[in-house]
Image (tube, rainbow, N blue to C red; front, side):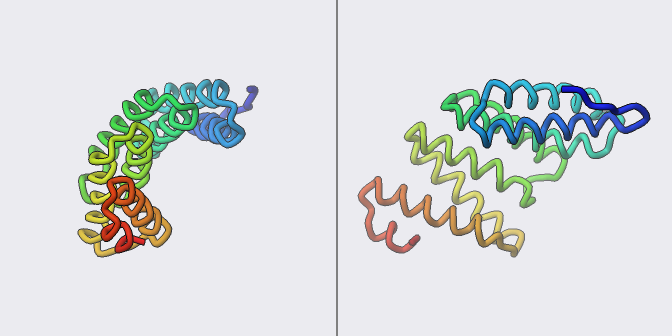
Length: 166
């Protein structure tokens, strides 16, 4: 990839690689997605002390890498990256922020694929607790959480709770 960045912020290169990585994930070309996302993460890491946006973007890049591994079926690698993203977000934004929700959501999906229903349920409940703590709501995400909890309850043959969450 050739990008002319002369006299432009180096962070522009980070976002370009990130966007290419996301496009490759959406096209299910995981090898190229990993290449671009890893490059973006490396450059972003070098900018953490000098570029204010780099710190927030670091978590986003880790989520994207985790998503790439998740989509490719490498669930353990996905979890490792998502846990790092969660730590990074907590470090920059604290424990009670909606910025945690996308990471928790994807972690729950990974645990569902690994058939770890208890951990997936705990993560989904953590998202609901965030909504209550912050007295806010993301309707699309809340819908996802309720449907996933209902699915978990159904898999456990707890049909009353499954119906309650649908």
